[in-house]
Image 1 (cartoon, rainbow, N blue to C red):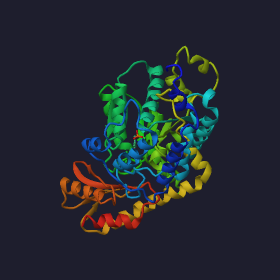
Image 2 (image 1 turned 90 degrees about the vertical axis):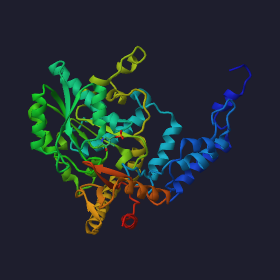
Image 3 (image 1 turned 135 degrees about the vertical axis):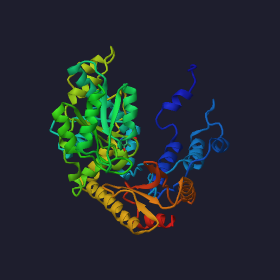
Image 4 (image 1 turned 120 degrees about the horizontal axis):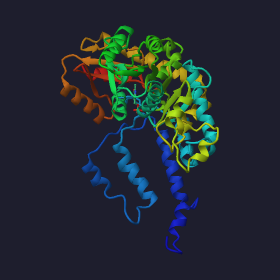
Length: 457
Ligand SMILES: *Cc1c(COP(=O)(O)O)cnc(C)c1O
């Protein structure tokens, strides 16, 4: 900066913009008061260019003006994922406590990569990871890190798994094995790791032992070395859990890493009525679950937990002259457990909300989501113009409108969004178009789901 120039000072000096601080807090507070927030929807690039114009300029718009632009133009061009009738993909429904604490995390400049810098926050995050580990039956000493999302969680776990296998067996034609209904991120992981992915058939939606063994034998015949089998604990399309007990047995018998991808559905283990669906997960070497999906936390967070975190450190710890002062200490550095270095303490919003409300309310909210999914599935079953594609297990319900083609679904879906009532998009299964309700929001009402079914008549 030029000497005497006060712009630099004002930009960083606390309290220089009191009006702006108040306006931003008011905005956040008003957004949290909306019950519900309008669903809203996207606009084209051209429309936005017209409405918002050029926002990055040499002199700046001023904070109040930029905030107004966000509130009037940009925010309404984003869909409110926490709307009760946002039922597509996997929604998110953060608790108010978790959203509030996200603001605190933003205001606190905490570096979550190392114990030295983030100890207090890392302690709190680790309590949540230990809780999740113990819910899954992993022994004391399990642990890991909150990473950005399930894709990165799966990658990090599988990099650790291959590291373990490679130390034992040297270089091989490595492969991972998962069901044909597993998530697309596994294929993306295989691509960046330059390994193969072997898919086992899952005719009922759930990976079972005979298909698993057949796929493993097929991989061997092809000269592939399977170093990890991934059990999906709640497929994204159908919310169905693999036979984790069978996968655990096969992994144990063949000295293969057992990873559970529970990005969406593992949260269901918190419901006492549904915990038995996950039997076998206590044998997992690693698992993931996304708080931004079904643990009522804001974007973006994936809890990655290892049975033996030391194996992850061996695979992931970064070394560099400026970092060794951290590595020399015998301390728990979250970043050493995944493919990342600098990290936000993104587990803290979940920690705060769980610490605030207690776990029992989480168990009940999740149980109710599942109950609602099963209730609406019954309604679908009795309507003669609808067909339930599969019985739901968790909180995803997939169904067809008989006689509709893709363009009928597209048209109907667009009308629902344009009317501001609901966001439900087409999906498909084995080439047949369908649609689905993914229910993770405790404020979703049965009556509204029925209205959506009515709109398809
Ligand atoms: C959503 C999902 C992922 C990917 O998680 P992101 O947080 O979107 O990266 C992986 N696996 C399953 C089963 C999922 O549902």
